[in-house]
Image (cartoon, rainbow, N blue to C red; front, top):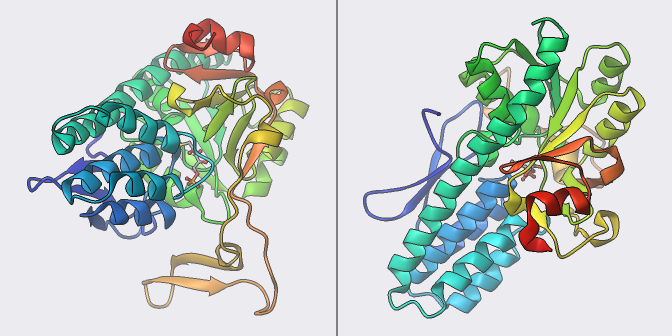
Length: 354
Ligand code: MRU
């Protein structure tokens, strides 16, 4: 679907990723040689986005096997790399199960990590297949006029491998000739919307407009948003959804304005072991300097730079995610279809969790 993927292997059997901290200004590829490289890439957000975190961790285990590292230590270290996206734990558990009893650990890990990547590509494609009719229906209702979609953070291909979750229905709608336009929340503090979503929408020729995070409510009140689609890092059994900080406020505004609020997710983001997202999803707290400084390309030097935006002594709070309760979610878009954000809805599509 796309000219590039977000993670790939090299001829000498190592792993490469794009340093997403530098996008959209610089295209820098980072080679992961040891599992510690994979761990650092996740921790420092060289890679980010729930499915890509999972895939990188899987390759981290492969690298640990290749370098003869203590696998138990590698699993433990990688599990601590980020707390909220459940895909990390899902991928590590899948690798552990596959490696148990394997005779050739390196080859088995290599193949399983590659399979995790391929599975995600197909899963995201199918999310698009099931999400497309939702966009199509609005387009029809508007007699072919542009469908305005608001999104938060980056749940595009850069957060996955290809297609993305929220972008898959959008890309498939564009391929079908449906007119769409995306309002992209800049997504402070790390600006995944401005830096990453705008980058990939530009590369895929999707009309879009960058907005500050606080603008969405105003647009919704004035009939300028037809639907919201966001991603998720962990969705619970009762359909509560953790996603990038600020998602909840968009869901509230959408609810108040009777605008459908969809969450697109691969089933690898389901955490069916917990119910109450507010109480049970661990929310990452990151370094306060991500809030105190803004990173961007300097107008003066043309180089990436960090700019302090508050007094030197001001302290900042930096919760990375919030939880949107299921009652504010119109529906979940998964690779198996669209369902209510509820246990009943999820079990209809995923009866294996009964
Ligand atoms: O902190 P990030 O950039 O890893 O947060 C990413 C998100 O919140 C995404 O919306 C989510 O992981 C879904 S990616 C398909």
